[in-house]
Image 1: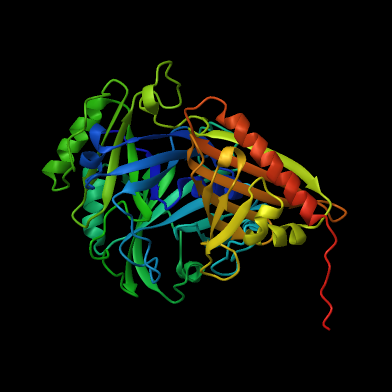
Image 2 (image 1 turned 90 degrees about the vertical axis):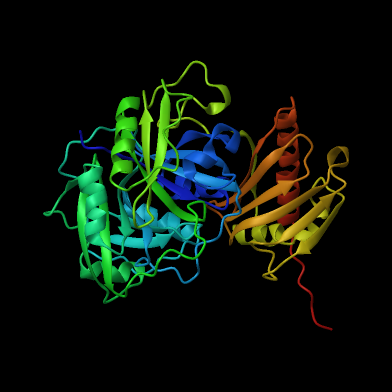
Amino acid sequence: MNELPLNQIAISVADVQLSHRWYRDIFGYQEAGGTSMFIPLLGSDKVQGVPDATSVCWWLMDQQDFFQIELFQFSKPTAKSLPEDWRPCDIGYSTIGIHVADFDATLDRLDVRRVRLLGDPIGEPGSRRVCVRDPDGVLLEVMEDDPRSGEPRSRSSDAPVVTRFVTLSVPDLEEARRTWVEVLGLTELPEVRLHGPEHEELWGLPGATRESFVLRAGDMFIEVVRYLDPVGRPWPDGYRISDHGLLNVALGLRTYDALRNLVAACETAGIPPNAPPPTTLKPVWSCSYVNDPMGFSIELLYLARPGEKRLVNPFNLIELGFRPTKAPVHRTQASQVVGAPPERVWQVLLDHAAMSTWSPFQQSEVIADPGGHGGAGTVRRLSGGPVGMSLTETIVVAEEPYRLEYTADGAPGQDFYHGFITLDPLPGGGTRVTWEAQFHSRLPGVTAATTRVLSALVQGLARVAEQPVVEEVPA
């Protein structure tokens, strides 16, 4: 059997639009399409082994020809958040390793997006590393050097990022070696050392001890680790792969027969599938999730022609990512230069109760504000808008003073609405305000109508932000 490439890393996320944009903006991943058709009627629950599994799934590409990040937002079942006390030594998929073309520029973007570094970068210039958490708590190691720099590699794009490894923490190295080497056929690389004791502090485990081995999976590495101190805690009670965090990885096959034969070999070896490979789209793609004895889900994915567009593609079922394609939403935006600094514009944006004074809505009220500052988690109600429209909006990102994101319910003919407000400082003290929206709709004219609303919002925001601020003088 030819060595299989690691061609997908799947993440369960709370908000696919938020996470998708986060990975794009900070690291430079590129859009690779998506689908809303992973539903029980088409067998998603059987394949994933999750009751009633229903999800929106979007993909992201880096430089590699046959690799992507897969983001699932499950509507059924309700996904649990990653435990607050989760540690990288706990059992499960733990870390994604990312090599970036410009380390300093990446640090700058992380700072602007208010992403906290887990510690100071370590290493000499040219080989620095740092760790952060993504919006759902997934651990990312950002690397200035590329551990595959001496190997010939194909490139499908000029994206400034390439995914290099995934780490999993296991309770038994020999059991893991049996799964990944003996059954799945990956090659162990005794000479490759991705991490040493000096790196444990990067992810918050200074002084930890562990044993490990590294596997080659195409142009990527799989690092298998057993922590000796601290010992990793087992999967949480009731854990399902739909819970937020790293879900699984996929190994890629190029024929349906190879997929079917490998699933059979796994089952014989005590690594059973949730279901046999489906045959509905057999000429195009198929997959099976298998489960090793320690509870790790591993996807085996056959795709006939990755990177090629199908002329007929009902419901985004025939393509499965692996090519630059916009996510399946309508998009529009409005932008304007404001003669006030971002801090002043931000002050106006977060005064949700006063939004009716500058927006197309006659009334605005705050329904909930758990933080007391109008930030993430705040819910506002807007009413008396165009054609009597009323909206309930929830702030999901508030990165002072440069970025606000929100979701909205209630717009006629729209769902899956996500808004992005970006405040870019300009020389001289001004701000460029960009207000974007993306959503689903089947009604004609909705995008044009939404553009008009966004234009009115930007113009009203600019008008109020540019007004002189009158300070109250104590009597």
